[in-house]
Image 1 (spheres, rainbow, N blue to C red):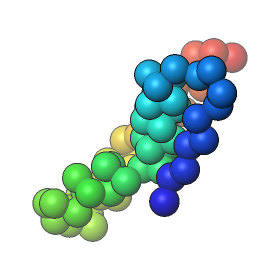
Image 2: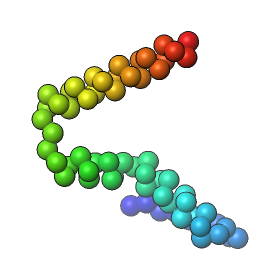
Image 3: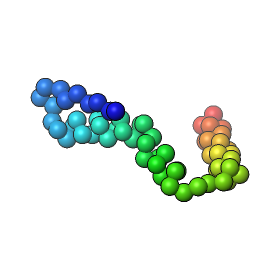
Image 4: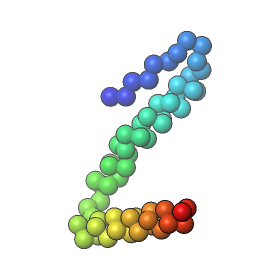
Amino acid sequence: MIIVNVKEGESLDRALKRFKKKFSNTGVLKELRARQAYEKKSVAKRTQRKKAIYKQSLNQENM
């Protein structure tokens, strides 16, 4: 359960923004969407490899 303490004098919009940020960091929606449709292991491995290659290419460009 996510708990966001509203500080004294803090606007509700600010507290809601902090809640949304905490909620997105937990990855609940990402997991929910992943569970809605089955993905074969071979396809999942392929996407992981593509992400790793992409990240590695970004790191090489920055150096």
